Image 1 (cartoon, rainbow, N blue to C red):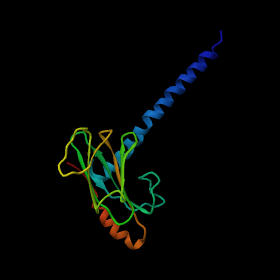
Image 2: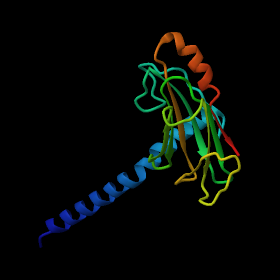
Image 3: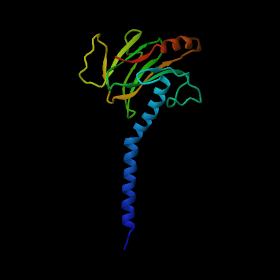
Length: 173
């Protein structure tokens, strides 16, 4: 009796299961680990954390740039919306939001912001109406990460940019 066809079928089935687990589960595992690290530094969710400037040893953010100052928060919109606010410095600046599966679902940068301050409402509800005319972004997952980036183009401006980026906030509405 030839058993090698069963071995091949079993190996292919096992490979398919591992492939599916890797493709679908690994992104959530990566984000859960990142969210746990950021929220522990911030003291919870919907709170901003202002890490030190990146060095060659920094790994809190994937492939950090020493030319950027980062602000991060873990958002949780399961109970209520979250207000994202930040001054927009006179240098490159961006705000990016990532879903629980690592998908980047929203980005805005300094060239798209009118004025020197931004306020965005992040929600899990499609029909949320907010007074004040602030943009409302619907998150595809109840939890995720918001990352603010500010370019330090010269060391002379580093302290001023750091002061501004520490005013970025992520708080329940």
